[in-house]
Amino acid sequence: MKNFKISVLDLAPVKQDKSIHDTFQDSLSLANHAENLNYTRFWLAEHHNMESIASSATSVLIGFIANGTKTIRVGSGGIMLPNHSSLIIAEQFGTLESLFPGRIDLGVGRAPGTDGLTAQALGRNPAIINEQFPRQILELQRYFSKENSDAMVRAIPGEGLNIPLYILGSSTDSAWLAAQLGLPYAFAGHFAPEQMEMAFKIYREHFEPSKYLEQPYIIACVNGVAAETSEEAHRISTTLFQAFINIVRNDRKPFAPPVDEMDEIWSPMEKSMVLQKLRYTFIGDQSEIQGKLKEFQERFNVDEVMINSHIYDHQKRLRSYEIIREAVNSLSKA
View 1 (cartoon, rainbow, N blue to C red):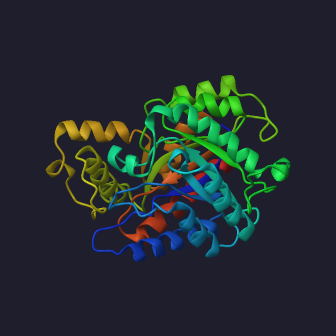
View 2 (cartoon, rainbow, N blue to C red):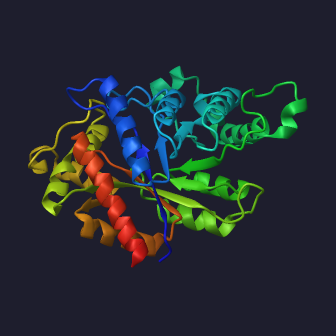
View 3 (cartoon, one colour):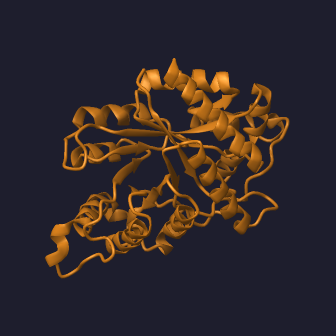
């Protein structure tokens, strides 16, 4: 089993009885904590029209987090590129990279990050997404290149800056694209695990080296809920389970505190649906987390594991990331 890096995915989760201001302060606190624990990067995800997630203005929030930290890489996991013009994203991330040199990542995906009606309000055209998304990635690469200095349309800031691009996916579609373009690939196993294994296989087998990357580089995003005891970890994980029930029910309300008994909340069918979506969710004490990460890495052999952790109590969330870091450290020494 090869060693792997460990990182954080944050959706700026909004909790019941907390303000969005509180949410942003908690995200900054978590980023500082992750930096002190030597996590590799801290990514924020673009979502819209959800009371439970406050990371809609992703570029703005990245700037807030980067300004409040010193060394950890900060970026998008991801920007939903067809929601935006390529030039605007190049300028925004060029600005971020100019403010925080060597610390900004640009992860991009093709999904809307929202419902169909809101996607329309964002100006998306679903009929052309599959051709628009690859074209936009090439446009970003052109805007970031020094060679674009003679073009009529330039990204300033952005031009000539080394801003790493990552392709995000929740199905096999983007695996083909990331392999073709020779770019690193991140998979959303924390909510769409069904095609993850096949996506990794496609990416590795069809990867074409590029000037950006010589070998395949894979990030797997999973859920992690760790605590001092297995019982406590399973109890606080009920916030995550309730959040996914809300997705099934199309209820976007803020995250709820943990409960003692989930069977009083979900039906057998809902339970089956949620547990299927949360297949790669590691819940337990340090020993259990270590064992589950080891089993995962022996199967998938990824370069980096990105942890998403929906825990209602902020201090317990911070502690969860400590325990996961300790588990990874123990694995690397084994």
